Image 1 (spheres, rainbow, N blue to C red):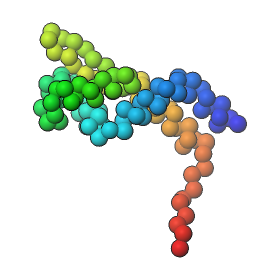
Image 2: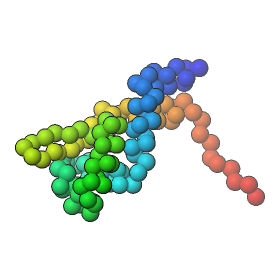
Image 3: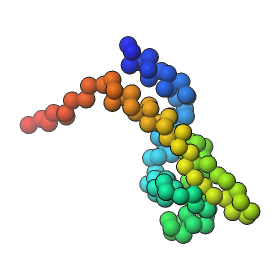
Length: 112
C-alpha cells in the first residue's frame, strides 16, 4: 500500500506530464537532441547541422520536447537556443525510482 501512496504522490505531478515525457523520449531523433544538449546549450542551426536534418523536421521534434517540458528555449537576437530542463527529468526519474525501491524484480525465467 505504501508503494501505491508514494507512486500517487509522484504521479500527482500529473499522469499526462509523465506520459508526455516518456513519449517525447521514445523517438531516436529526440534522444539524439537530448544527448547533444547534455553538455551545452545549442541553437537550432547547430542542432540541424549536427543531426543532419532540415529545420522543418527538427522543429516538429523540438516542439514535442518543449511540450514535454524536457527542453527550454531561450531567444537571443534572431536565434533560439535550447537547453535541458533538468527538473522535468527529475520528475521522470522519481517516477521510475518508485519501481526500483518498492518492486521485487526477479530474473526472467526462460522456458525450455
